Length: 73
Image 1 (cartoon, rainbow, N blue to C red):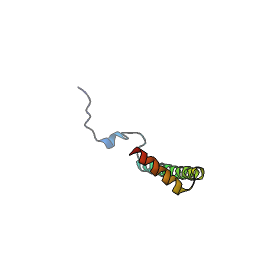
Image 2: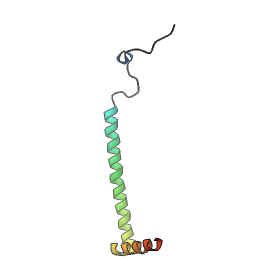
Image 3: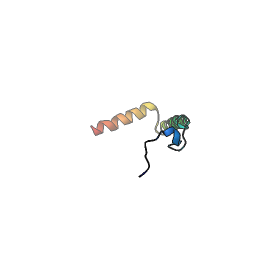
Image 4: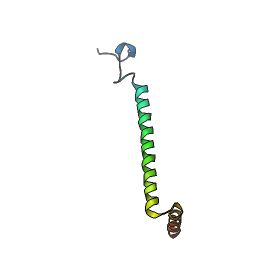
C-alpha cells in the first residue's frame, strides 16, 4: 500500500544538518553580537571625539543642538 511516517525518530538518525552544534552556534552568535557592539561603541566614540575637535567644546555642541531644536518647535 505505502510507507508510513509513524516511526521512532531515533531509528532514522539526524533530522537536520549539523545536529549537536546548536550550543556552539549560539555561543558563536552571541560572541559575534558582543564584538559588533564593542566595535560600534568604539567607532561612535571616535566620531564623537572628532566632532568635539571639529566643532568645539561639548558645551558649545549642546548649545548649538538646543538652538536647532528650538527652531523645530
